[in-house]
Structure formats: structure tokens, C-alpha cells
Image (cartoon, rainbow, N blue to C red; front, side, top):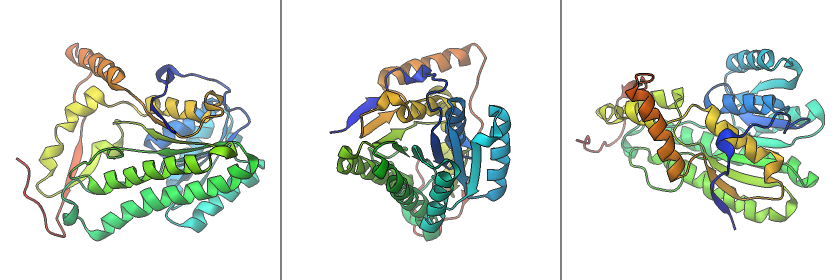
Length: 307
């Protein structure tokens, strides 16, 4: 059985020291949600190993996080392509060698393909999403559970996204990958229920990060994304909001639980968030979110451009 819904009370979850002494790995952690998760974990006393593809970005982020938390010794990083199992294994070994144990692993690394008809994509864009979102989650889960299961404790948290529960036209590649991640994560939770390891899935919802604000679309489909300027303002969040739920999932608040399948907002919470953003807009405090949409040519059969 899985526990679905919204994590109770996590919108304001603050727990200084709740992860004190723990070691966490966060992939895709040099920007957006991954960076916000790493900050939340550090603020809560954890030592954090961050990972991302670009070594320069990893080094810069390690330095920035170390300075911000006031204890550079509690943050390290590695340049890792999560589609490569050997690199993910090296990441896990580095985390273990650092403090002798591993407590939390967050598979956050993810990419998307240009918005538009699935068959119009360059096949390399399709396989890139599969390699990062599916193989990356599998590799991270495998390496994490190799260390967590023998200890009989710890947390594995896999990040979901739009399409994990429903069909999303023009985002089929990304959506299908997240549906796979959700099904895989909940199956793992059932299979490893008796081990003492908490295995959880979390959908952070729509976030105001460059993952959304700087995007690509197949030629002719970019105009369909312009409504995101308003949607992101009204129902989007800054990544620090869902990061608090990830912290809650990683904390002792979920001790003895597994298979939690959570979202940052329920319908009521989302309506309240949208109302607050709408009031701020009317008062002139905020406005539409700026988007940068780059159109790319179709490389396969396209579909009719939507009206």
C-alpha cells in the first residue's frame, strides 16, 4: 500500500538539525530544485554530496554552498553523468568514503525534450531524456539501496514531474519518463518494505526555475507556451517550497514509512497559493514570469500546429 497525497504541514516545515550527522547525496544539484534541496539539507545539519554533469558548475556550487552554510567541510561535489552506472557508483563510494555511511539519496537529475510532437524530435533528444530520467533514476536507486538496505535504514527519494499520472500531449517523452519513475519507485517501496529503508516519490509541481523559463519548442509550437507566463506566476512556486517537503521526507517524521507518494500541493492548497499570487499581482507586487523560448526545427514528421 502507498500513502498518496500532500505531505501534512510541510509548506512551513522547518527543522534545524533534523538531519544532523547524516550524509546525503543529491543529483542535479547545481541549480533549481536540486540546489534548493541541498541548501535545505545543509541548513538542517546534513553533510551533502552534490552531483551534476558540469565540473565547473559543481565546483562553483560547492564553494557557494560551503560559504552560505558557514561550514565548507559539510559539502562536496562530483561531476557525474547519471546515465553512466560507473560514474554513479563512484559518487556513492565517494559519499561513503567521506563519512563512512550514507543516509539519504535524492534522484533529482532530469532533463526534458523540446515541447512539440514526439515524432518531430531528434531521436537523440528522446534517448537523452530516457538516459537521464529513467536510467539515471535506476542507477541512483541501485547504488543507494546497495548501501541503505544492509544498514536497514535511510531514505531514497525519487523526484517526479508533470505526466507522472496523466497523458501530456507535446511533453510525451518527459511525461512518460516520469510515469515510469513513479511506477518504479512505488514498486521498489513494496519490494523492500521489510528492510527499514524509506523509499518515496515526490512531485514538486510547477516551479519558477530555468527548467521552465528557458525552454525549447519545435518550430511553430512555441506560441502555445506563452500562457506559461501567467500560469507560472499563479500556480508556480520557487524551488525552496517543494524542497521543504523533500526535507520532511528525509527526516525522522517519516520514520517507519515507505511508499509515500506526495505532491507539494493538494487542490485546496494550490487554490490558496494561486489566490495569494493573484492578490499580489493585482497589488502590483508581481507580474508575469519572463520566458525565453527557443524554437528548433522538426527532424521527423510533425503534427499540425495547434490553434
